[in-house]
Length: 196
Image (cartoon, rainbow, N blue to C red):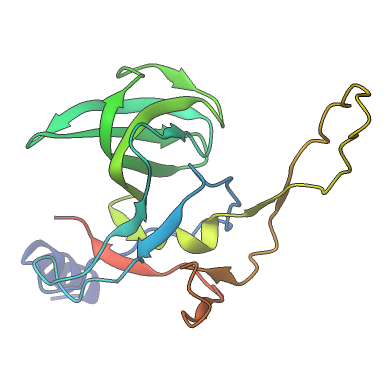
């Protein structure tokens, strides 16, 4: 039996490990909301093993959640009583927005980056997949910077605030307001394996 036929038999029998999709260039997205991450991504050792396939945030009830990139809503609805929105992004990633109190978009709808897709409960889940593989979202999220400005106190009319900027150099990100919590410096995309 030649090598090609042997590989085909092994692949069909499930003896070869799954092939991960090609890794795309690392994007930089604006955060879906402004909140503290209370449970970071933890890669799963196996499909049934413990871990976290995304980021968990502590939020105020009904906080607006924005799409991080343009794409098409591939799912908007409830799964086991929890509201989710999934956006198949134009860049090939799929973003999942979960633990929503309400979804404000519907399946098939086009969204732009910054479009509100739903409102939170007191916790919010954000996950990213490339193909069927869960990816750590933290390295993909930039940091929004607001420029400091002086506000007149003499009754003069305020000027409009300058636009915020997004820092996409993948800086170290603090996962908590607690200064004792270590910061995360994301060098690469981290994969959790296939989603089963």
